[in-house]
Length: 244
Image 1 (cartoon, rainbow, N blue to C red):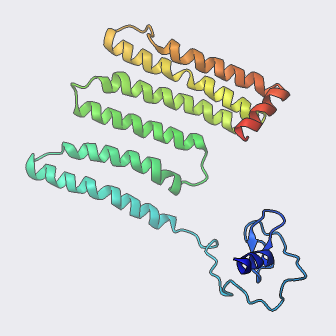
Image 2: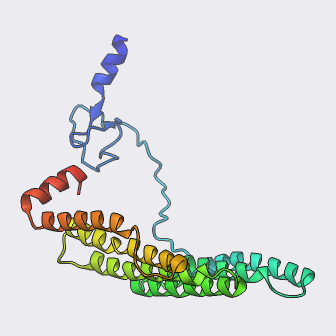
Image 3: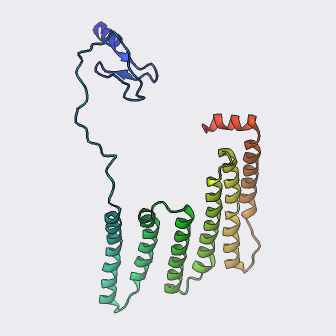
C-alpha cells in the first residue's frame, strides 16, 4: 500500500486540466499543454507509434455515396413493383414505396449531392416532396380526405415556421436568448395551424378550440426571453443557469 502511494506521488499531472501524465509525454494529451518537469526522466520511451495515418485529409466520394443510397432506395421500389405486376397486373403498393423513397432521397441525398446550398433551398425541396407524397397518398386513398384537409396544411404551416426560424437563427444582430424568444413565438403559431385544420375537417368551422391554451404560454415565454435579452442582469442570470 505504501509503495502504491509512493508511485502515485511520483506521477505528474497537468497544471491546466489535471489529467495524469505518463513519463514519456511532453504535452498533455487532453488539452495540449506543454509539460515542464525537470525531475522527469529524459530517457523515457515514446508511448505512441511514430507512424500515424492521417485520415482527415481523405475525402468521401460523394458521387459513389449518392449512387449507393439511391440504389438502396430503388431496390425496394423495384421489388414491390414486380410483385404488384405479378399479382394485380398493375402498380398499386409500388407508389407508396416510390413516394417514401423519393422523400427519403430528398431529405438525405439532396444535401449531400448539393452541398453548400442555402438552408432555404433544402427546406423548399423538402416541402415540395412532402406535399407531393401527401398528394400521392390522397390519390391512392380517395376515401381518406384528411390527408389533404389536415396533413397538407400542417406540413405547409410547419414549413412556413421553419422559414422564419432559419431567418432568426441566421440573423447576426440577435443574441442567443433573443433568438430563443423569437423562435418560441414562431412555434406558438403551430398549435393554431393544427387546431384550425382539425376543427375545420371535423366541424367545417375555422374557429380554434384548444390552440389558445398552448399558444398563450409560448407567447408569454417568448416575450420574457426577448425582454431578458435586452436586460443585462437577466440575460447574464439566464446564461449562467443554462450554460450559454
